[in-house]
Length: 232
Ligand SMILES: Nc1ncnc2c1ncn2[C@@H]1O[C@H](COP(=O)(O)OP(=O)(O)O)[C@@H](O)[C@H]1O
Ligand SMILES: [Mg+2]
Image (cartoon, rainbow, N blue to C red):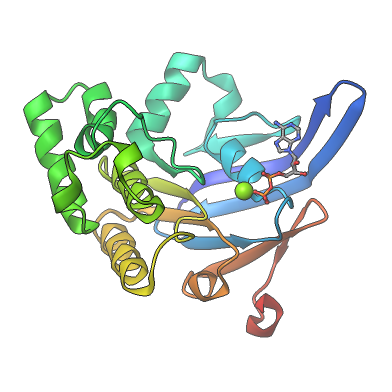
């Protein structure tokens, strides 16, 4: 299997004024096509930071991220934005939906950016909203939806482009059990169809255990936990 997303010796330290906050220390990771990887870690351990770096939304202090062999830091901002739109789906911890747009318009946005017509983009968006159980909320603004509904809109938006890699930050945090199962099945079917890889950051052990591989961030380092007992 081919590696789609690789990070080599990533370190990240936030600098604010005189204070340095070291978060990641020499983290390396390879994700193969179609692979499902969970990253566990306590709050503040650096899970979101790592995911943002993997998705080219933030840069590491040192180290390299490569997508299909291409170093992200060698791309200019347009090329990086294009790569993200073409290949990556990002499910943010705090959704980041556009408040003045309806659910359907939010989901259609990545397709509009790709140059699809409004009609085509809206049709695909409607299909995805149907798949996450929100066909009755298409016209709602984010402010008129519950946290779980907003989360599902964010998931639909990340999947609508059928990306190569989905990076998901606590994707099931606000979902009830049946919605959660529906989302999981949706991810799985996309993965089977398109060899989509998933990197899911979570503190949900049950979700993590359904992935092919479970990693844990602790003290800035990434540890492979292939022993199920260690995961608990
Ligand atoms: N922009 C930032 N500036 C300074 N410190 C930050 C910034 N973002 C995150 N941090 C710090 O980095 C650490 C890891 O944060 P984060 O990656 O969000 O953790 P997690 O997602 O595992 O809860 C935390 O201690 C947090 O306070
Ligand atoms: Mg986080």
